Image 1 (cartoon, rainbow, N blue to C red):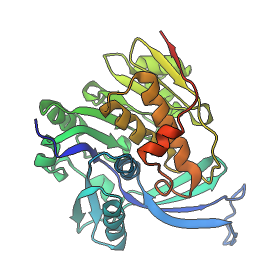
Image 2 (cartoon, rainbow, N blue to C red):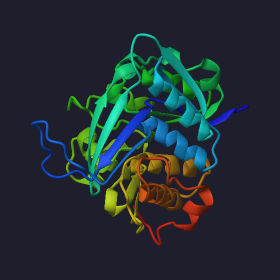
Image 3 (cartoon, rainbow, N blue to C red):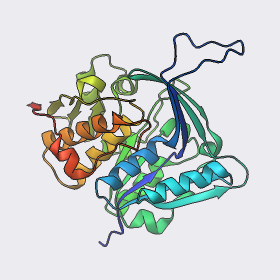
Image 4 (cartoon, helix red, strand yellow):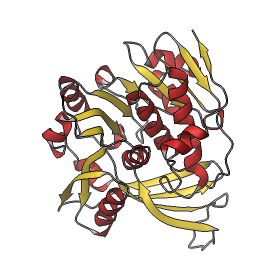
Length: 310
């Protein structure tokens, strides 16, 4: 089968306004507080993952929806500049999503105006792009209520592609994934999301539960690196030390590294190490994409050891 793209990402793309580090507590009452830094960068879990994968050398397409506004034009320009083929529907009825990220150390608060996310549908994905992609990834599942991800993944499977999902956070707190996991080959949560999705407090048990049914699970675990589980084998990997500016988008860069390792058929421990390195290296600059590594750089910074446990 001929493939035009290694990776098709379907999901969220928006400008991020990253401000911080912010004081604790944040004051209302029309108080103006000065913070050390602020920037407008490309945001959205899907968009950051797409840019990270393109930086690592994959042929990447992105499908989604933006508004007919300056923010939508910015998203399109930044994705294109990163080497991502854009298939963005322009919506005349809703604006491009906007996110403000308030940073404080390794933590952050995220405020998002959903805009076109609530209007994104499966028909926004060009059939010919879906049919000629080796792997299909979707992000921000709970922010895209009208996007039929199970149907997209079934169609991807029909064409021989593999699939992955990063649900990201659920603002409603319900964590109801319906039947999407049944169509998902790779699940890519962070530690908190893995516990919520599996209803298990222990992280290893959470990963094992999500891996039931033959799925591959890779969990981002912040300063503790990451772990993966395929239903039989647990692999753990420490992080690497970098000079961190902020952690915005680190999990999405982890996604890019893991998908790249998967498509490159790297062994389990090396695939996870690549993901961990990509996530950590991305924190060296503000926002999610400015410090994403090329493949040679990521491979040069792989964690020194990982552990395979059955």
